[in-house]
Length: 125
Image (tube, rainbow, N blue to C red; front, side):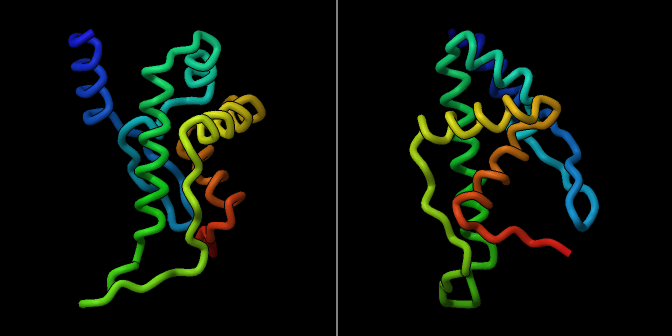
């Protein structure tokens, strides 16, 4: 188990993918880059440790989304579009639905769609 966790830690921190945005490309590291096909295989095999990691990654991404631009010198401001982060099971259920209908996509895009559905505002041109 320790070897598997060690491999995952190295994999998650050292691998990345470029993701297209309205402004161009951004570099994505971690589980967000995992394709929907691989994610669905984790769901099908009930790979709870991997699904828990995906949920944790999604929560971190959603937290970062909500903190964007929140700090202004010495004050914290609220932004329109902040969302209520769903629990782990709901997060993975949404990603399962997203990936089932978008098998060529990845976890990052699924989380972005979840943010939109929860009322979050995503910048666009």
